[in-house]
Structure formats: structure tokens, C-alpha cells
Image (cartoon, rainbow, N blue to C red):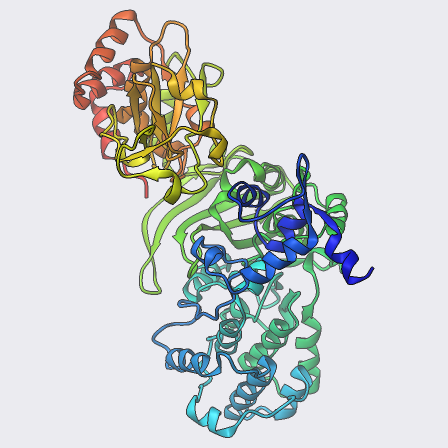
Length: 632
């Protein structure tokens, strides 16, 4: 195919999305906003030449960077917590990265030079490094090593820190790699290892990267029992060097052990049949598999359901459970979404069938420049169906390279289900939840219409700070409080054809509807009787439960009883329709409904709480108790 043929080749929206490194929804939005041209919209068809031209432009554009799109962001960066910021090596690596930015120096040559320096400091023969990395293409200038002298520090992945600081964010995102802060590694190791360490215990890190987990293993674990794998050849080479330094490897036989145990391979395709007593680590998140790889994985993994790209960490959990010996333990750092997002139902079901959930440790956000709450999930493989045991639960915050536990308790394993692994309340709180659920009630599922607020696609151009001719007030989450709305601060012309997303107009114009704040950790509900429109930070509920009006439902959803229920049942800073549809809304007498509805006119939260509590048979003592309970 010649260049002219290539220029005229047409491609689908999925291929355009793949080339540009953005979602199909973003591709459609860019077409609507005129940022991208297409041949057809039904279906979407593009000229390859147009897509490739935009692809080249984006590499130097600030547009995607401003949208927090790290897939294409190619800046070097320093992972702040990968090693201790108090380490003498930390400021040196920062300065070295600045020195090397923009210069064409082979990364392996840099690693080679510092690895040789570390080995020399420990009297390990230089030939050991050459056998692992090969000969350097070009020796670094001596002046560079003298100017930026790094020291070997036991347990610190200095070489790994240097390596990942040189790699581009684009590379790390595409492979699903997020490198784990050292203090989180220590927490996982501490939770996974028994206090009395058996000398013959075999351990595996299935996505070992540069070996930061392996470096911080207990000293009693012998090198012959340490295993790891990764698909990154540079990372595997560094992991091997790190173990050479950790265990002072000097002989050829011991070096061969390291080489044969730390392998350049895809763990998911490993059919060795080895079984391990411990599996620890941070498996890849969000790895993008090709269509052919997806077909193969579909046949191999029962946790891969649906037709979209599989979640890599789910596959690693399934393969790790298969690779564990009976009664073996697996402790992984995972996104908190694994606990209750519907997409991960299949892997939760698999875990319940094959293992006990020993502990769930909520960590919050621990990665530099990545906004994703994390958990340490620790499982024990068992050949018998796991039941009637306690799961340890803890909530922590990271502060200055330290994990500080704020709350901990044990919960009955019966609280776990394939629908959700969230264990965010202790037994006393759980009893209150069950009491609330036991009251006669209905839910909004099937008894209300839900609609999303408007997504303009371009707030800068479509919203106004003043009421221009033809514009109307638009409600956002900022104007939405419990029971009432502040005056709108933005205005727009209601032109659905110009919006990226818009519900049918009848939902906005409904004369009695409820707005709910999308970004919140509990229901925040206000009534609208004026037919106002809203942005998607303020979404819509239109109840149609026979015998119950919108004001009554608002009173229940805004009450402290329902706040307690929501906060201890769901753990999400986004209020989702699926959660709202599950909330148990108490049935009541006509008199109670009338009283609560009247109280919402000039809200008296304390009086509303008292009446709502009585509907759920909550005593005054229990109401005082639930008002004190906090979720971290």
C-alpha cells in the first residue's frame, strides 16, 4: 500500500481511539466540538491521515495534559515516595534527572554504571553485573558519577528509583505499572509474613518490576526460595542485580539461581506448575490487551467476563490463587474498586470460593500523581469452602512516608458477598444497618426516573456568568444543599444539539423533582419545583412511588439515619444511581408522611431525624450512637 493509499485509508472509531490514546466518548466529543473531522457518524468513520495528523499534534499539545490524560504525557518525573525522601540518594537522583533530561544517554548504560559502583562497594565482582546487563554500550563520563554519587543502602531500590524516574509516564501507563511506595511495601510484607518464618517458605512476586518488594523481604528468607517475574527486560535485570546486592551473591551457582528464579516472562502465561507459600506484590492495573490476547485470556480465565478489555489485576489474582499451595497466603496492593465495582463481581466470587479473606486494609491514595484509593487485600487459599471466620479490617492514612491506622476491627466473614467486599463497619454498626434494612420499606429501583445533568463538553464557551438573552439559570453541585438550592451562579442556552450529553428535556422541566449532588459521600437532596436544568454535578430523581411524595422521600434521604446507612454501606465519593436505588426508604402512615413533608418546608434536621428514626424502630440511644459513628 503506497503513501497515497494510506492517506485515504478509513478507520473505525475504536481504531481512532486506540491511536489517539483517548476514549471513544472523547473522540465523539471532539467531533462534535469540531476538533476532529470524520467522514461519517453512523457509524463513525475517519480518514487515517486525519487521525495520524492529530496524533502527531497531540504529542506537543498542552490540551490532553490539561485534562489529566497521563497516557500521552511524556514528561519525566520523580515518584516522591518510592524511596524514603530522607535518603541521601533522593536529592542526588532528582538532580541527576534534571541533568539528563533532553540528553540522549542510554538508560541501561546509566543503570550499568551505578550497579557496578554498588557492587564495587560490596566487593562483588564486576563480571556479575556484566553477566546480568551485558556490556555497556558507552561508559558514562567519570565526571557525571563524581558529580552525582549514589550510595548503596540496604533495602532501598535506588536503581529502581533511578530507572522509573527516567522512564516516561506514557510507558508506565500503557503497561499498567504503578510503582509502590516503600512504606506500603513494608506494610504488605508485614501483613503477609508469619511471625515465625519457616526456612523453606517459597515466595513469588508475579509482577516484580525492579524488585522493590523482594529487596524488603525478611532476612531469614533464603534466595533459593525467592521468585519473581515481569515483562519488562530492564526491570528484570535490575531486580536480579538488587538480589545480588541483597544476598551478596558472588558464585556462579548462586547467580544462576537468581537468573532462573527472577524471570522475564508473562506470569499469566506461566505453566510451570510451581506452587508457592506466599504471593505478594502490586499486580498491574489497567493493562491494555490486544484483541488477540483478549481471545486467549477469555479461554483461560473464568474471572474474565464480558467483551471489553479484561482488568489485569483480576487476572493476576486468579492466576495467583492457582499458583498458591493449599493454605498459602496472597497479599496484593489493589485499587479499592475491586471491593464493590460490578465489573469485578466474577473475581470476588472466585475469591470467596477458593480462599478466606484474612484482611482488608484501606489505605486511601498512596501513589504519586495517581488519584486512586487503594487497599491491601490478603487472602488465604483453602480447599474447603471458607465460612465462619473473622476478617481483619483497618483504615489508614499516609503521612510523611508512614501509614497511620485510624480505625480497626474484625468483621464476620458472612458480611462478604460477591456483590461487595466492602467491610466498612464493625459488628455494632452492622447490626444497626440490618435493623434499618428490616423495617418495612420500599426502594427507588423501578419507582423513580433518574436523569443525568447536562455535560456541555465546553463549559468555557457554553456557560455564562450573567443572564444573557435566551439563557436560563443552570444548577450545579455547588448550589445544591440538603433540602434547598442556592441561586444559580451560571447560565446557559438550552440547546441539546450542542451538548456532549443531555437527558430528554421532560426530565429537566418536571415540576416536582429532586436534585442530588453527584460528588458527595452521602445523599444531598434538594427539591426543585420550577423546572430548572442542571449540569451533571447535580443529577435528577423523579419519584413515582404510589402513595409517597417527593418531599417525604427527600426527608428520608437527607436524614442522619440514611446518612449513616449510606456511609456504612457504600464507600465512594460519587453518589451513583445504583446506590440510591438500593436505599431502604421506610413505609409510613399518612400522618407521618404529612408531618415530615411539612418539616422540609423550613427544615428542622433534629426533628426530622427523630421522626425518621422512629420509622426504622431506632431508639433514642441508638440514634445518639449512630450520630457519633464516623467512617474514614
